Image (cartoon, rainbow, N blue to C red; front, side):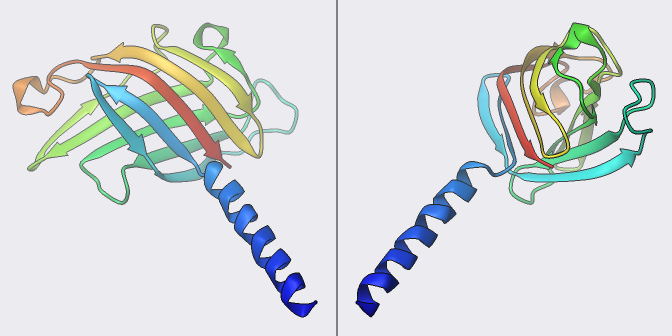
Length: 163
């Protein structure tokens, strides 16, 4: 009987671990034809707004790395509470990509630009879920010295962040 109870407890805790792993924060995206998984996500409250105030909502800064490496980093700001696509508002305040290839640092960024296609489906105090696909060359100016050249194209992008 004790052995049976022990097996049930081990079985249940094993199932719990599998559920936790499926909800880890991550960004999956294809950049210029190569698949990347950003699995080291840092979220910091950037601005605390007034409760239930659309004019001054909470903003979070998100930084995403591959493992703990710093050669490719995505960072962006998130306006808490809003869902929909980019045209519905400035849910993402900036979407930046920084590369560091042998000391050659390049930044690809866009400040509140309207051309990115981003669709936010969940955006609350607990999680942020979105898909995205767009080309970003604003501010690149890195040329052939960067691993991505002057232009970055994101396709098949998906974001899941556990806040």
